[in-house]
Length: 394
Image 1 (cartoon, rainbow, N blue to C red):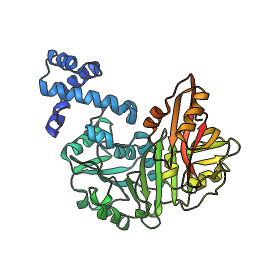
Image 2: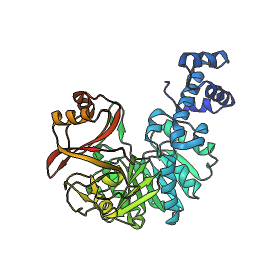
Image 3: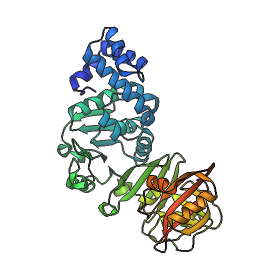
Image 4: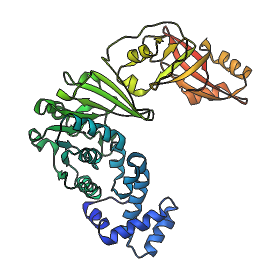
C-alpha cells in the first residue's frame, strides 16, 4: 500500500485522478494483481493506479463507519481506524448544537469525521491536525461533503491554537505511536495529557474523546463521563466538561438508542444466582453503572466484584444480554465434561468474568460432541469459581 502524501492526494483530486478512482471502484474487491493490471491497461501510471486502488479499498471498509458518503471521501488506513463513527459523531454534534455551540475548535481532527458532523449541525469548525497528509485529507473531505464554507482546516500543533476564541473545544488526542501501536498511558497522548486536561479551564465547554478504558479518576471536577457502544461494541469514552455536563455518568447504546445514567458510585445488592443472568453492555460496565442497571431490572449480583446481574423472572432490557440459567455447579472440568456429554452438547458459547480460563482451550479440554447447543458462563459466586449452563443469549 503506497504511502499517501499531500502531493499524491492532489493528484487523486485532478480529473485524471478522479477517473482512476472511478476505475478502481469497479475492480475493488477483486484479486489485487488483476485489479492493478486493469488500471495500468486503462492508461494510468503505476503510482496513480496504486493510490486509487488503495482509496477504493479503504472506501469499501469505511462504509461501515460512514455509510454511503464514504464513497467520496479520502482515507489513510490509520486514520480510518481512529475515525469516529458517523452515528457517534452526529449524536455528539447534535448535543453541542443544542447546547448553543456555534463555533468549535476541533483539535486532532483526523480525517474530519467530527468536524463534518458539527458542520452539518450548523457549527463553524476550525479543525487542526499536526500531520500534513491527514490535514489535507480532512480539507478534501470537507470539500467533498460540500461543507468547506463551514470548516477551515489547519496543519498545526494543537497546543498553539488560541482556543479561547471559540464557543467550545473538541479534543481527540492521538492514542497511537508509529511503531508502537496503541498507547494506553494518557501521559503518552499527543497532544500531551497535561495540555488536554487543562482545556476545560481555558474553555469551559470542552469535550474530550478518549479511549474506553480511561481511568475515571482523570475526569475533571464536575465533568460527565460518557461511554458509547455501537451494536454492542464499545467504541469510545467522552468527558463532557463545564456547562456541557448533565449527569455524572452516562452509558449510551447506539443501535437500540438507549441511555442509562447515574452517579457511577453505587453498589448493587448481592444475593443468590437466579433463573436469569444478564451480561451488561460494555458501556454499562465501563461507566460504572452496573448498580443502576441492576436496579432497572430488579436484579442483584451473586458476587460484589463481578458484573453479572441475576433475576428470578425474565425482564426485557436493551442494556444487557439475557440468558436462562439451567444448571449451577462448582467448577470442575471432569464434572462439566460429563454433564455436557450427557446432554449431547457439541457447540458451546462461552462467556466469562472473574475466571482465568481460556475459552478456546477449555473447549478442547471438554472434548465436545453431539448435536445440541448450549451456553456456558464461567464466573465466581461469593469468591468461588462456578460454571453456569445457560440457554442462548436474548
